[in-house]
Length: 142
Image 1 (tube, rainbow, N blue to C red):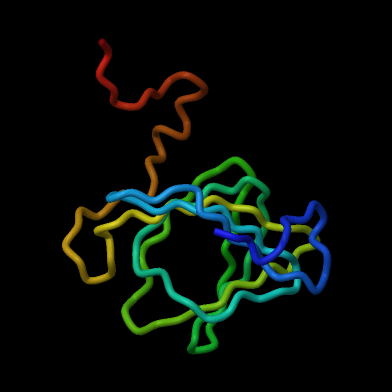
Image 2: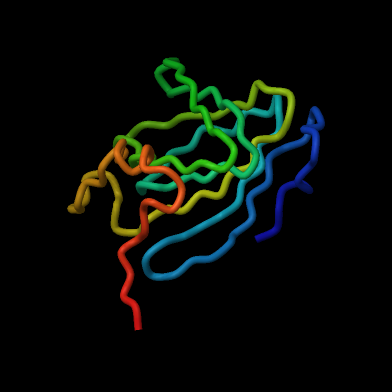
């Protein structure tokens, strides 16, 4: 995919966001998005559940098509789980900070709103408090 702009280092005013496809397969689609300050994204929706990893964190103001607003806080180096948007709704995101917010978004195919899927846990509080090296993913060792 061709970015709408070159990703900046300081969030220049008057520059649109960029979106770069990282990969897509039968299970997921993943892209990198850079959201510059003072350039709200157009109204859109997310049909699928997704994981967002902040490469350069910040706060986005999410404005629903109803006018309701909320804050999405992305801390650098962390991942958050976001559910698919309710059917028929739209929202816009705006970076009101002083520098770019850069995230990698991975949408999971088969998690569309209203679809049959297993609901993911919001957060495992225990795993976050175990300390470095105390948790390992389930893997098969050869």
